[in-house]
Image 1 (spheres, rainbow, N blue to C red):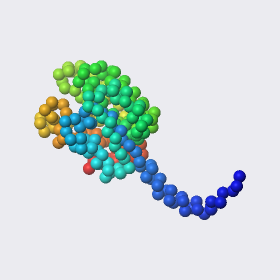
Image 2: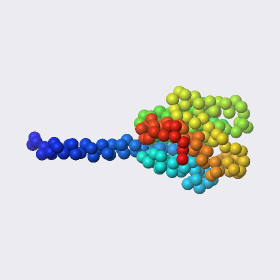
Image 3: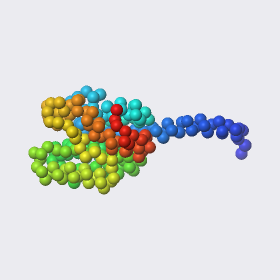
Image 4: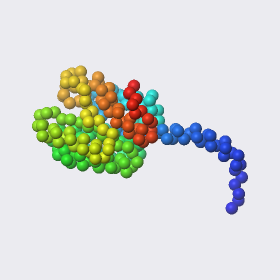
Length: 222
């Protein structure tokens, strides 16, 4: 084999140059948002939704991060579980945000089955090298206190069992009425979207730090 003619001294010039690019590669990452109508900005301009607000916030606070919103109105936890493997293979995200389960509750589907679907999505995300985040939901009281408790506990149990960055209720702090809810009383208005982002921000920041995309833990969302 012929000896390489590449000058050894060139290595010393290349190493500093490569070091300049290394932080950029380490910071790059994608957040995959797997949600339902709440994250799909149902009934409002998509650019006003909390996911779009997140994308703009990260553009200034975490430039290496990209956001892909794969949310679908009407999606259930079972539907999200079915779609997730292909999304993981195609997108190869660093963080997977799971905002599903609300439609399970509105259809009075078994909370235990929803919890199993959420757990499976968590395992799939981690197996693909991504950090999962869980955004919880609550349902109206007319479903009965027993079902309501089981539904809410299902999210909390999955978060505990899998040590997930977790927001117990994505709509926390929204007030009944036309300012924060559309006419259906379920979907938030454009004015409410900054509150959704504020609720989602702490677990998202934790996942971004764990994925080594950027460290925003303790930083407020701009």
